[in-house]
Image: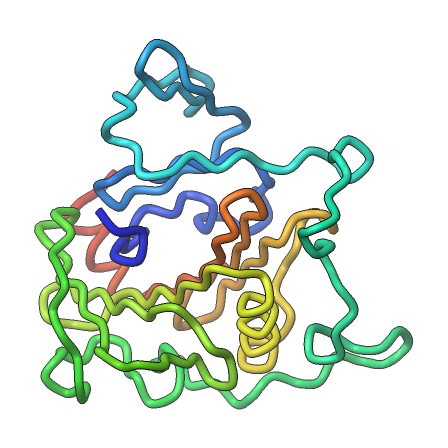
Length: 243
């Protein structure tokens, strides 16, 4: 499955913001995503810790295994990869200045004029690209555009997930650090500066009244994404499919 069409429906790291810690990440081909204190490959399987126990899944079922970066002092030097926080005015405020206030938010809006819970027929130019089997089926759409943008940021793709005919998730993908930097600046502009647990890890969280959001970048795969999920629809999903 193309990484762009993962819906990332299970994001256990967003259940309790205060409990989130940066760790290894296991993304399954089913669309599930888990954060764990440690994940590793062994004899054709991927193993990771979940609720204090070691869980084993076949390596063929894993879309991607992302290891949390070691502390800064333990990282090997790299000349061709940008630093975790290169100086850039759009990314944050100058020292001593407050961060600019976020744009006015609508709890029913994913971003721009995209309303959570609306059917795909109400969005112009969407093309069905697949169906995630999770939760009885989540249809995934994208727009066939030469240049895709999230606000001011140029991105690789934007994937819209619809559950029971309503907009449930939005995932924005980038494949290089410069585009991710612009995506981060746009996310901060729209949603305020998110919670960040470690200064050396590009991972931010928001838990707004209407949506959960996570912004993440992996230096090793050069992949970044902004993931958003409707809280109202997620309540319905969890009621029908309790974990």
